[in-house]
Length: 184
Image (cartoon, rainbow, N blue to C red; front, side, top):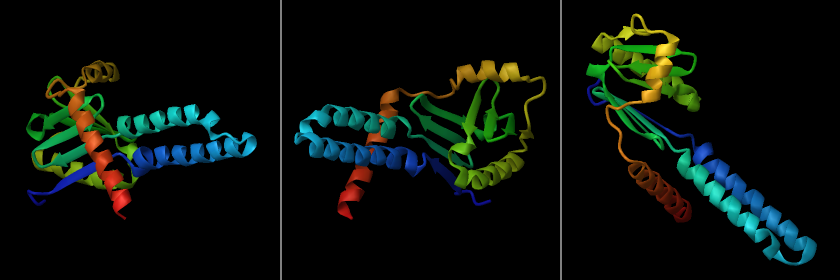
């Protein structure tokens, strides 16, 4: 495997772009229907603004990014920014659509089913790295389901940055999407 290889998984476009856009189109038709019925488009504007806020919240809050390279696993979501180094990982378990990365006192759980088109690439990449680092496949010895639940509450104290970093990144992605839309 090439030392510079990296896999990046981001939130699906339909979740952070398609769903809010669909809401906006739906509300535009709603306002036009209200306008056609009573001659005043202003009756539908408060609801339109509410849906605009909800659509914007969906676009920002649903964003996530997973980066896996030769040295680390990096996961960013609204809950925080988490990082595990491959040298710290003692076991990797694959259950259904979940990947569980176990360190000494931390566990990072990622739902591969969120981006099903990339699931095979992620599984293959992780399998190659598990083999390279000689990491145990499955749960660590003596680990039960209850222990995993207790550990997942910790989420990761390896690296956690404030939510403002996440929001800055999500807003920058949203700006790029809007610029790209209007430049076409």
